[in-house]
Image (cartoon, rainbow, N blue to C red; front, side, top):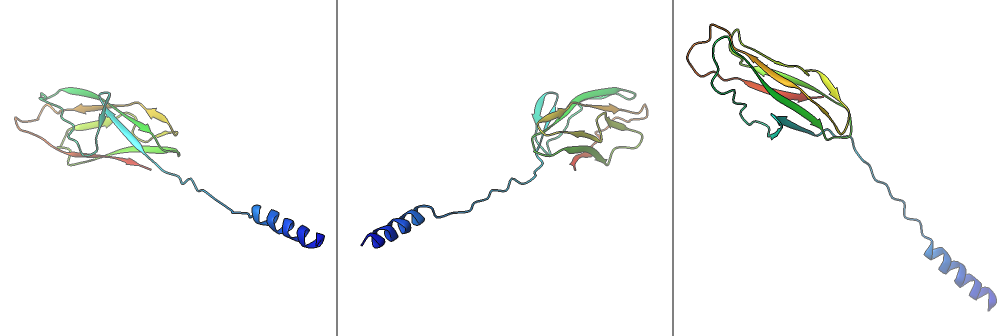
Length: 128
């Protein structure tokens, strides 16, 4: 009888100590928030330079915040920029650590040969 009771206790203790292995993977992810003149800038929103004059030089603050958990390198790619116009992002190619900002400026240079019309082009911030 004593052996049966001990056997039941050992079984009960063993049942209460069942192991349930668990795991959780935190993946690497990149997440970026962009700011144009200190306001959140949403992807594909027009960056309007407003009225510009031939020979003019214009600037806008354009900052990126690395909200991810890995380093991120930021590069601005331009397409369709009018001939002889230049646009420079002074932090192009900068790497930001997680939870830090890369503070930059976009500078637009309008050539003296610019005519009286509306110009448009595209830019993309590539994150690697």
